[in-house]
Length: 119
Image (cartoon, rainbow, N blue to C red; front, side, top):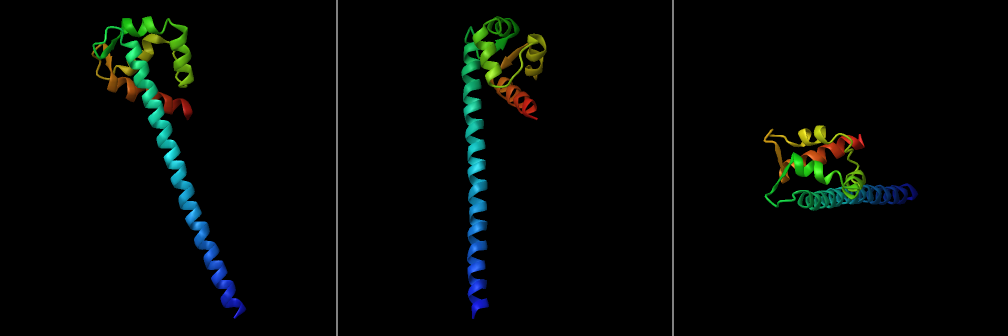
């Protein structure tokens, strides 16, 4: 009978531990998704600030002009994106080689670059 009770207690403990592990993973996933959502929202705000003429695209001139502003450089650094070579960064973001960067290119490019910076 003692073994039966110990088996039941052990079973309950293992079950609770497994449930806690699943809950813990879910919390981590939710935190990561929230970070991504915040990061992309911040990038959208930055895109709108860099799109000086409001046409929905950033030209190289707009990009270069905005990166002359220390606040924008600090913002990129806060997002863990290196902006030391404006031309190279612009061309990395200009995925379709149209000489402009639209919002989708900007978001995708910055997110991928930020991911590489983490690695």
